[in-house]
Image (cartoon, rainbow, N blue to C red; front, side, top):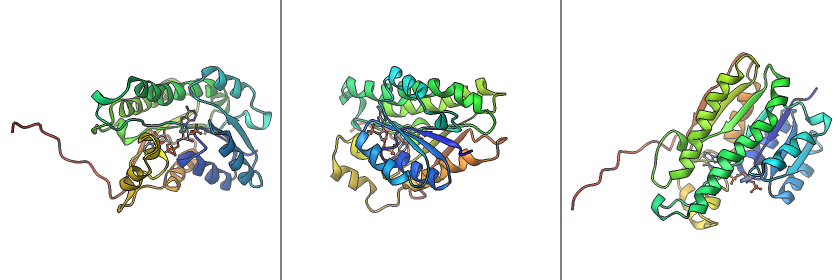
Length: 253
Ligand SMILES: NC(=O)c1ccc[n+]([C@@H]2O[C@H](COP(=O)([O-])OP(=O)(O)OC[C@H]3O[C@@H](n4cnc5c(N)ncnc54)[C@H](OP(=O)(O)O)[C@@H]3O)[C@@H](O)[C@H]2O)c1
């Protein structure tokens, strides 16, 4: 029987490329995102390769998530890999200049949304048992501070700790959990973060070599297909051309 990957945020970036990569590797797919048109296009593209079930939903809506999981057709309801990828950053300005609603949106999506999907899928993942995986897409922002990261980085720190804590409770079930934490990667992420500023997005990725969605999709497939006795707790991946910087110091004058 084909293995099933449940991918959130499949309409763009890492999620969309992961859908293509998992299809190529012979997995069946459940694909989620809010933009229905993009889901339809992806389904049309992939359906000749593998069975695809698309669900247009907002991960912040716990009821919609729960209903979508309950309504999974039989061929898709034994999930082998949950890829909790839907997420976003907003407002790269300093914390003191950010609208409260932007902080709420990041918490609602990156924390509550990820928790909603995980809670709904835990029973099927536990039923699958040996070799099942939860791959939570965190970020280097969840491990390292930087200016303008405020609630985004904090939400990804939640993803890391939630992943570790899940490992403790799922011990003995065979279900693996990973915090996959990418660094700079070129997707629509920065366009979303800057409120649609294409020039700012282009400038960030200009004259360097960021990670590509394919780089991260490959890591997702690697984690999900490791022998069942191996659990990657955290996989932090940065482009070679990105590193940390010196501590900032406030000085007189
Ligand atoms: N790119 C980077 O540099 C980077 C680095 C580290 C971590 N990450 C993380 O990687 C993940 C994927 O981001 P990406 O870089 O691929 O960005 P992206 O191209 O903007 O894709 C984000 C995806 O998340 C979905 N999404 C956002 N809010 C949602 C909601 N409320 N309900 C359902 N789906 C939602 C979007 O779909 P819809 O808009 O159609 O709903 C889209 O498919 C995110 O968790 C992000 O924080 C990105």
